Length: 546
Image (cartoon, rainbow, N blue to C red):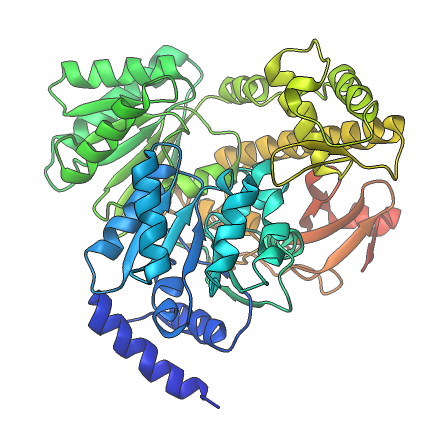
């Protein structure tokens, strides 16, 4: 039997020989060793911490290819390029942009054993024939990148990720590795459950990025805020040491506005948003990576897969909808470990816009229409066979909600099938309930974002507390610490430690995310984040442990 120390030596040697990585972080090595021990592993590491190494190196010691499920083609291409620059076996992708000959060549390379890694989107794995072909390859590892997308409690939930567990089973349950940079404890539990991970090991690094200086500039007038954003971009880009950065905005229109204003000042800048052609977005991405442009002004469409170490600033021209998104976006800065500026330009009214943009009122009428149309059939049917008058976007949302609660399943060939164990009315009630719960969670996230923007305490304490990580002493690297308003936190009461499970008499089950001397923040499964004052909790006997 191979011991952990023997794995340690072999993994380090392969990392250096094949990839040129002369140093592996403790978290990377700990996760790799668990993979080699045959365990499923959930890994939560900050952006830039080398999550891809956790599967790339062990794959060299295992028989069979490694499947990597990744949500974006650009992200897949980046990882394939990094493998091609190494001495590891080839990597191939299967996606919608390829020709038949390219797909055939990819399969041939896998069957010959020339390719050791295959990158797919979750949508690709809805194809029954493709999964059969993968099963014939005897897959060694099944990697889920951006794994928070599998959780309805994650900030970027994608229903296609819900179909991965049956695929894993059909492949014989190879070793499963779930990778993400942003997953609080409830999200981690959801990932494990939804992927069917078996007694998984967990490797979770701290969320703190101490090289990022956090600040919030507050405004009451939108015009003043816009002028301040543009002035800050000009100041930062005028210095060669700080000229590369990202500016996040709330709308496509703002992306174009700030890009045009910056370009007029002679800044090498480009806009990036979902309304652009895919080829144009890819060109902007590549120009930023190569240094042809210094600044990207982007909506949230620009996020996953950004691997540029020398981003010196991330500015938010408006508050995003959640601290999850905010953390992921600011994580693009300072990946080389050097100092970077993080500034949120905050106007309270902007969060009203976010409430509008994220409003997802449960489409109960459409849910009912879809459910009754589907339950009329006693066999799986194509979507086109359903007689549904609702607009495509509402219809898709209704299908996603019904699938989320298990009222319908989507077969491997893409057909819709109703669950015979419940009535259409039950299906509608459960799906509508899931939609209302998500609305509550979304609203609570916006309020947590407001709390970060308006706190006079240490911003890093507030941000880390959102993810369930306690920082008792002020960080010394944020604007409130500079202003002298931040203070040392007194640990929370012993009866409600961080990460413990609790139950509220009205709001149900939850998990303690942060605790101070007089208050606790709880993430409830039904209503999202709530900050509760401990004296009131005790007086009213609002919470019980477990």
